Amino acid sequence: MFTNRIQKLQNILQEKNLQALLVSRDANRFYLSGFELQDGQCNESSGCLLIPAKGESWLFTDSRYELAAQQVFRPDNIKIYGKNRLQVIAELAKKLGITELGVEAAGLSFQDGKTLGQEIPLQPTTDIVEELRLFKDESEIAAMRRACNINHKVYELIRPMLVPGLTEKEIAWQVEKLFRENGSSGLNFSTIVGIGKNAALPHARPGDERLTENCSILIDQGGRCDNYCSDQTRSWWIGDKPAAYFTETLEQVKEAQRLAISAVQPGMLAKDLYAVARNYFAKFGVEQFFTHALGHGIGLETHEAPSLNSACEAKLLPGMMITVEPGLYYPEWGGIRWEHTILVTENGADVL
Image (cartoon, rainbow, N blue to C red; front, side):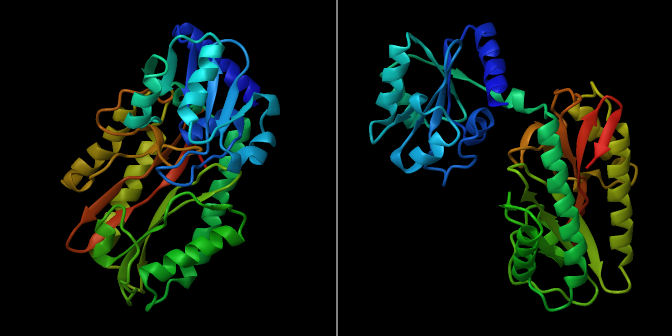
């Protein structure tokens, strides 16, 4: 699998007349090698790959990850660095006859780029590996189906647990436990829980707000399965008699989603799919309360290309995995979002 992916990348490098690419974004590194999906934190790196346009690839890491690297990569092609990380990379590149090194602009800090550029000329690149990751193979699709099935099960389990008195933080903790108890390796993003007015914040952080009788709640959750992400959102009313504003808004949001999913076709522009939902909201004069994109790509990362916004010219093509998540947000009482993950197929959309 990784050999085929690297070969595809090398073909692209040759087409672009790039001698080699230094792969430093963690998800891209994992996609090509199986080594360390996520770096510890934003100022740390588990390592990087050097992919020449022709020939063998190389993995650079430090001594903490040496054994882990040997479990997934050819030991003879692993280089261990210390504080001289960039020098080790440049020295090997030059030894391989590379006179200009392609780098991921989104994966190299300004300081590292400046330092490495003093050792070897650099050629910034954008989205080369990400464009390969757009199209999921059968193993990736299967993993994402499993991840989404776990997500659906967690919603089924958490719904009856939502009783007055629980705080947003307590609910988020229950969600995380349920993911882990039902086959997920962990969350792929911090669970979003918004009670009442807090649900008007699309990315609300769980706090001390408590559920009461007759209030709304929004939960956006995701867990990993076999390294791949899920992402779903639900909005519910707690109590026997939903407020009229909640029922009306929920119907609008769910119908906007239904129309958008039904409209998915290969070759459709992302911005045109966004317009399906926005135009439906416009019929009710509420489009200004739809404040974000309709959705996004998803895979090894929660947010991948394409972004389903009003400006995105990307075409939706078979094999792409996207979310469809329209929402309406009202500061005076809260908000509603409804989200599913979709596989674009030759015939339209397959809802996971």
